[in-house]
Length: 138
Image (cartoon, rainbow, N blue to C red; front, side, top):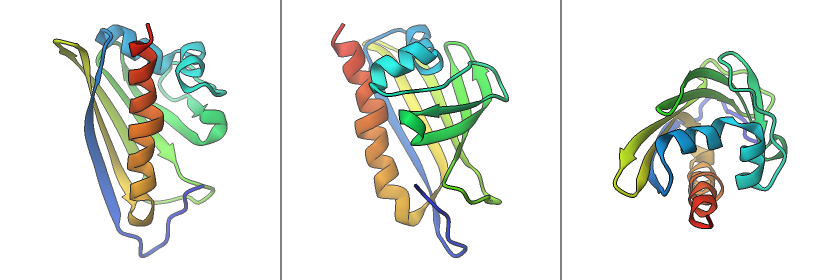
């Protein structure tokens, strides 16, 4: 569980992942509960509606859908721990057509400095990496 300290430095993460599927397929994989459970191999609760809260990896990621643009963009607020913060962590995923399928642009803002390495490894191994593997197995 991640918590904010009052004097914590906040960082941003940005990276591109190449997924061998169309932007529409990747969007559906990121916003359809059963498909999320398939590529994460864990429990997820997700309703693809703006304003709804979601959880993934059996509650390891909890947040709220702020913007959903099918096949193009997902914007979410991710919650860290039990603490309220004045600076929410916003995750923006943009899907771009790519010659190999989709370039998934990920940007997460306001990550506590002490959690940055764990968050970036999570994107590489559990989120972006798992999604890449999911489509490579097809």
